[in-house]
Length: 271
Image (cartoon, rainbow, N blue to C red; front, side, top):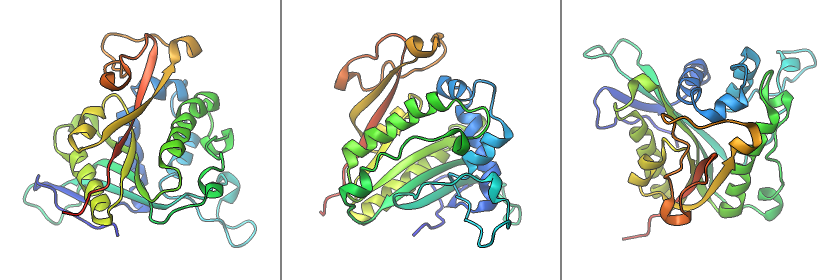
């Protein structure tokens, strides 16, 4: 299903990720989200090597060893069964006039495709929360579960067990913004959803919100997390906590609150 495509920018190529791309994907992710308040709260001492490695498993989960003592199973967390088909795509910036040189990964997206309806027992199993074992050394499990876990619970409420395409992550290297890489990855996903006649869901960060609206995603709810009251974080003037996102839907975010917008792109109807 995942295919290589050429976006409008001739120096960009969108292709399926491979396990060899994980380190580059992690570099992009933490460069993009590391300065944000929620990542700072989740990783108060910075991202440890253990946390980085275990976060990488979310893109290519380790396979359980066949024999006791094989591989490095003792250091690998036990991962919950993913509810759907995991699709990880990368956007590469290609060298000018040199097809022989590998491209540089400057953005990625992680999608989950649920093709068939699922029973309530499957979609409503309450398995959102993570542990210190799965998140890695130095990650604040409480912050992670109150933020990411709450977003996953929101997803359960709105998507239920219906077939859909879910965007879990989209990030681009901060120094390579405005290259069209994020748009190229989003276009790939929306075209896939349209080809299957499925709706698409995502949870928009304050910085991605306007891009998603351009691709037809509509606000359906918000997660307002008052991080000043809970963890004492104070907003500075140069940071965007989503206070002006989804204002028409629910009004401005209260002071001290970090807002994430739950969005849906309806299924494409037949002409």
